Amino acid sequence: YVDGVLVASEATGKAWVNDTDTWRIGQEVSSGGGEWWLGSLADVRVYDIALNADEIRKVYLDGVIDDLGRQRSIDGQAPFRRARYN
Image 1 (spheres, helix red, strand yellow):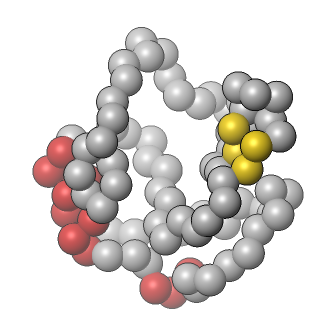
Image 2 (cartoon, one colour):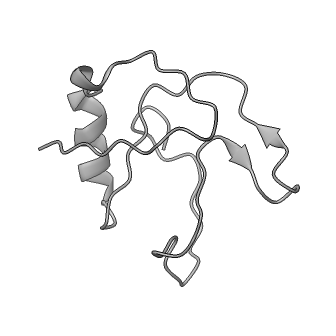
Image 3 (tube, one colour):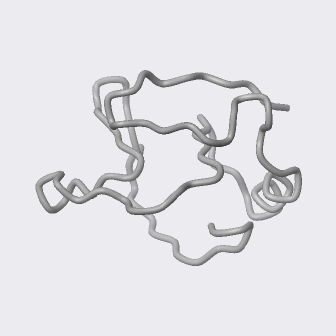
């Protein structure tokens, strides 16, 4: 989804991540891990359930979570910061 609109979809038949997997945001792993996203991401969220199209649209319309800080630089080694949003 980009700006609340589905742009691509792929069914995998398995869980995306488990408690032993390493996962990355902004890094291409299929090419050996050396490619990084050049740009900015305004809002990244991870859920433990699959959201339907209406729920995703609502999240988009609600906007970003302001209290976490919008302009944060990370180097790929930064610790994960958990947030709860209802």
